[in-house]
Image (cartoon, rainbow, N blue to C red):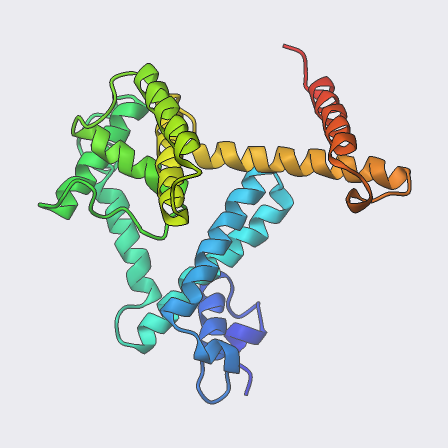
Length: 274
């Protein structure tokens, strides 16, 4: 027999319908074989991927796509909650209640008696202080997720260390360190093992993230923008080559570099003045 909450949107909508759909998908007797086999570990990569797709839609200002991407991300929470409920760990309602309680506890200036007369920066500091209090006695870098993109995690590690005074005092100091790390990599590239080169490259990227932090730049956002720019310009190269009946494989570096400069000039001309 059909479940009204699943098959008839008029009987149940929104979260209740989505929860019913997920329960049906995971039903051992009548559900989807693929969904039934999934675990926290196998679904986790999809959760990360969906979060990135939400960020991508926002970055592109693709508002028509954003609703669907947010739905995909919401499904991940419902999926994990269903697996947890089956194991007797917690339910979706527990998840919603936990985040509701956390938001109230971390905003005493909205839901409590504390004054709202403070800046966004002060609220950020208060938020971090509240998180630290909730964690209790812990090491400085505890609680920063290992699964974060490497640049984002580097930024969080550096911010956490900076809050206890472990930080370069100025951007100039970071630039000096960047120059030092780059020089070490260049000088030793012919004598290092591949593992050592990888380590030195990691050090260089870590300092790059620190430089971004000192310049108030989100390194993930900056790199995403650079990736988009590279993609746009390279596709222009392919377009121009196609007009000449060629592909990149039929071209050479000199020709493609010339076309790259043409695409770069086109980009600059398209930017609004000022």
